[in-house]
Image (cartoon, rainbow, N blue to C red; front, side):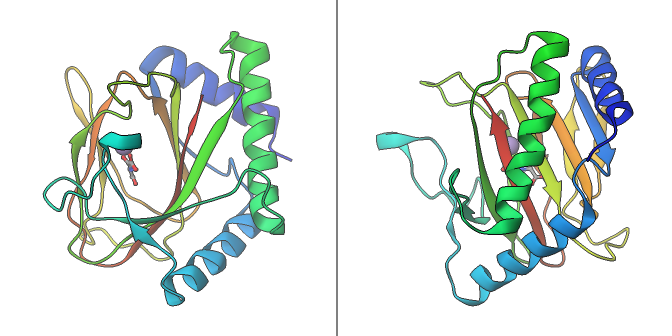
Length: 197
Ligand code: OGA
Ligand code: MN
C-alpha cells in the first residue's frame, strides 16, 4: 500500500508545478515483475513500432518517435499487470476525492527504446481527442548511469527539467500543458507509460 503522505506530496507538486517526479509510488516487486513481462514480450518480438496520431490518422514516423510498445489490457489476468492497475486505481481514486479531477479511465503500454532511439518534443494529446488528463510514466531501468542518455525533458515556460529514467521512478504531468521529449538514448530503455483520462 502506498502511504497517504506520498499521495499528498504528489497532489501538492501537481498543484504548484503541473508535474511531479516521485519514487516508490509503485512497489518495487510489482515493477520487477513488469520488467520481466516486458523483457519476455521483447524476446518474443511482441512489441510493435509506436505510431503517432490516433485512429485513421495514425502512422509510424521515424523522424518523430522510434520506440516500440505493447498495450496492457485493462482486464489483464497477469498478476503484476493487475497489481499495477490496482495501484494506479488507488492513486487516481485518492486524487479524484482530493481534487475533483474526475478521472474515470486509463490506458497504459509497455515501452522499449532501443539504443539510438528517441521521441521528439510533443504534447500527449491528439488533435481530435482531448481526454487525456495526466501522463503517467514509470521507469524500469536498473543501474542507469549519468551519460546513458534517454532523459525525459520537460519543457516548462522558463526552464527545462531533465529526468533520468531510473528504476522505480514515476513521472506524472498534466497532459495538455507540458511539452516534453525523450532524448536519444545510448542503451535500451524500458518503461510503462500511460494516461489517466
Ligand atoms: C510518450 C512519452 C516519455 C518517456 O510515450 O508519450 O512522452 O519518458 N514518453 O518515456
Ligand atoms: Mn509523451
